[in-house]
Length: 155
Image (tube, rainbow, N blue to C red; front, side, top):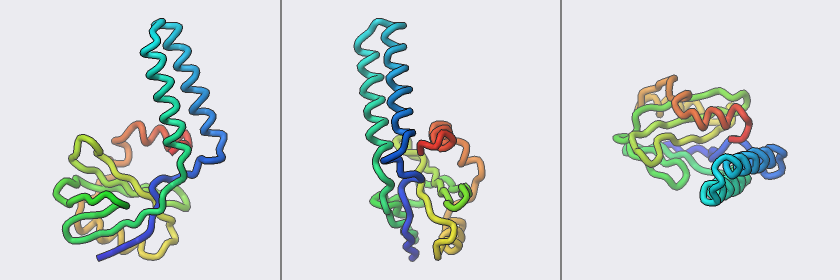
């Protein structure tokens, strides 16, 4: 029914100083856990987690296509049926709109995508989403980790 281009995440942190904040905080927590627990397993886990977070956040945003059909929504390669969606919400981030789709899945409860505010087709996307899913403003604050990362400018 409707296809509209979007991005998979808000910021491109490839050449940003914020990436090194992740390494610095991770190194501090790794050293702190070793001093407190004297356990190489815990410290190694923290080090691996820090490196994974660094590499995941250093990737540029992917250009994805949002496709709304009668049986569900496709966000990039992910096909989500309407039956497992519980609602959606929209956050205005200035020049970008953040769309959040909440599902009943345990493995991935929230799906996010970002669209420029002046992009054609945004109003049609909003009306189509509203016709299939209930709008709930509370969804924006349910994922505490995502909200914290967005406030820090990492997401």
